[in-house]
Length: 184
Image (cartoon, rainbow, N blue to C red; front, side, top):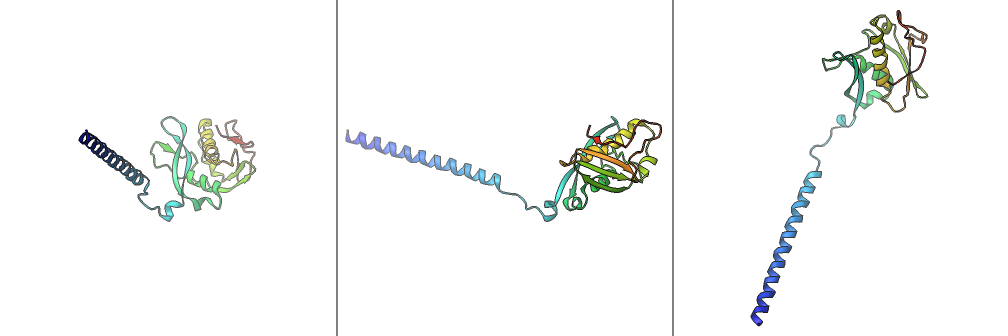
C-alpha cells in the first residue's frame, strides 16, 4: 500500500512536470511569434517620411468618365500653395495609358487661393482656347479640377476664372464659369 502511494505521487509529480514544461514551451513559442510579428523590418528614410498620397481625377478614355489616380508626392511640395500644386500635378499626364489629363495643353495656373471653403482658381486663357468644343469634354475638364481639389477636407466648392474673368461662357455651350462648382 505504501508502494502504491509513492508510485501514485511520483506519477502525479511527473505528469505535473510534463504539463508545466509543455505550457512553458507553448507560451514561449507564441511570445516569440508575437515579438517577431511586430518587429519593424526596415527603417523609413527621411524622404519616405515626407511623402503623401494625393488623388488626381483623369478622364478614362475607354469609358469617358472621371477616375481617380493616386500619386505619391513630397509633402513639402504642398506647403506653399497646395491648390496650385494639385492642379499642376493634374496637368501632368497619367502613367496609365487609359487615363488622360482633361486640362488643355498650355494651360497655366495664374492663382489658386482658399476663401472660406471655396478655392478660387484663376487659369490662363489656354484653358478655354485649347479646350475641345464639346459640352461633355468641357464638363469633364471642369469636374476633374473640382473633384481633385475637393479631396482636401477644407474645400467644398471651386470657382474658376480665366485671366481674372469669372463671367466666361464656353463658346457654343451653356456652360459658364460664373458660379461655384461642387463635387459630383
